Length: 462
Image (cartoon, rainbow, N blue to C red; front, side):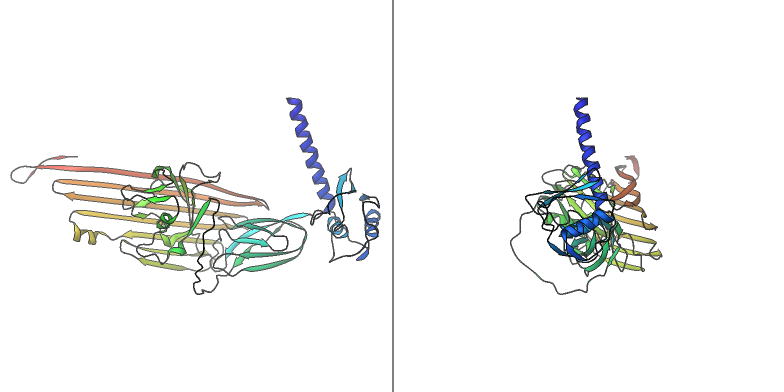
């Protein structure tokens, strides 16, 4: 068994070493002596003016074919890619040499080019907020990528001239041209919000798709009647049901509420509802987006059997101060955000408080019901590779019901604090480290009073 494992690892090691050697040869700088000539003349030019030896036979390569170079190839791989285009050969590396051997199919496009990584962040030009799921597309090679929840993207491209298109729903697309990609390159992109246009409604049959994540944006529900509630949109998704008789009554695919994992900026929240399930703890004015996973849970999530609800709040405007005030039937709220230091430090403060007691007193006396939410977030950019975020949440519900000689009280709430560090390690490595503290309290009790014939309290029982 040990011998078999040794042989397997040796084969993989030799294969990896050979690929690295071949990649190193292709990325060797080289400038051809002429821009046009036969295939044979270009191959001999490499043999005589570089430390590389290319071995081939006239039966495998059409050495007499005339070639005119496009642009100025700067490496051996880029030159060979143009010279050997459409030739039915394979290029192999053996002991520091390149062997051109016959093949049944033409040489694939970009097979001999060196590949580099283009990476960076996509953000809002006006606020500096990361644009989650922004699209990066290479129309020439038909390769693309999506930005993660922190706006970070990475895409591998061959050397040479490259065209990249950046787009995001509701923003003006941006196209950049890189004249000559010769190394791993960072590109940070800012997109401008697009001017509003009239609504276009397209009706058609819904196509079946693979189950995964459903994305909810706060802006999509600005016109929903009543108190702003982004969680209400979940009831429109297949497999999600609301049960009003149960606090936190969101049932996903037949599960119970305890099987749902609710995350607020990566921090678990044990009861994400106010007013016994009537409203979520998420203030719409502080929300950036929310992902709902009903299946195919990513490996980074654990603890939820039925669903995962991943809520992300705003980082804060890095450009200017702005605020928003909302007044609803059940509660009023405000949110303010802005830079402490432009393009470096931003804060976001959101507060919501209920005002239902005056309405309840008209319906039934002795009822006192209130709740509040406080959300505070600080975002600090440290250089070009690091970002620190401190997120604090506090929320409570208080229910007081007094009827006759019975006094009932019920109090519950969440306290969360999270410190998050984002680090860009390299073109293909992005690390998100978070330290979380989550607390939930639920206290209930009642008091029963006994009176004598004169109306004086004889005994209180709790």
